Amino acid sequence: LLLNGIGPVNSFLNSIGINSVDFLSVPLNAKITVIAVCVWVGAPYFMLLIAGALTNISRDLYEASEVDGATKWQQFKEITLPMVLHQVAPTLVMTFAYNFNNFGAIYLLTEGGPTNPEYRFAGHTDIFITWIYKLTLNFQQYHIASVISIIIFIFLSVIAIWQFRRMKSFKDDVGM
Image (cartoon, rainbow, N blue to C red):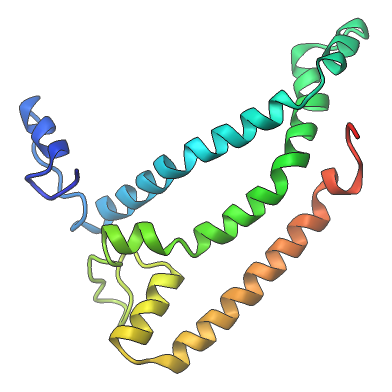
């Protein structure tokens, strides 16, 4: 779809009078393309997750809040958001960790490129996991890759623990 100059996206752009876009070779375009593809792939998952969480909220809660005179905003803030967050919060933390190490999308689209001359081993779209992959398989820098992996593990563990502890939905049994 995104092949530079010859893919269907560029063919469509050319047919409406717009010049071809170099999606994967220009650093800024490559970053935007990788982000757009990751969002495009992940959005349906979250839509289904949130839709499932919304269907589990009892209609009785909304009816009772209407009797008490709550506005739609108050219903959202006091009923919908806490109930959805309670169900979705663990998945949000796991998704953060997954996206932190989202190897597939980046490596399959750009292999971490385009090359970044400012960094010895990392390209413009590399994230830690693709950088570690290159360090080990392409450059045999196992010691650096090991240290980076340990730092990533510690960082993600601290964030996950902090996130779970600060979430109000896990301190209270909202709606249970």
